[in-house]
Length: 82
Image (cartoon, one colour):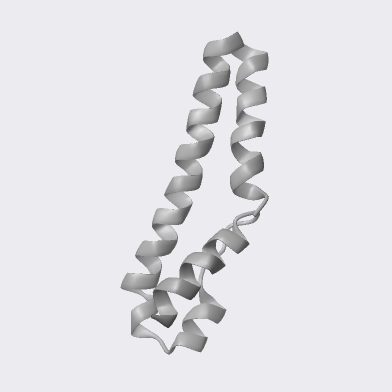
C-alpha cells in the first residue's frame, strides 16, 4: 500500500517547497483527504455496483486507481465477500 503512504508525503514535500510549514500542513491534509476519498469511493462501488455482480466478477472488474490497488482490494474483499 504505497499509494496512500507516499501521496500525502509527496504533497507535503511539494507544499513545503511552495509555502513553508503552512504548505506542508495543507499538502499532507490534501493527501490524506484524497486517500480517504479513494477508500470511500471503493466502499461505495462495492455496495452500489459490486453487490449486483457475482463476487468473482465484481472483484475482477472493480476499479483500482494506480498506487491504490492494495487498499481497494482490501476494501473490496471485505465488502463484496461478506
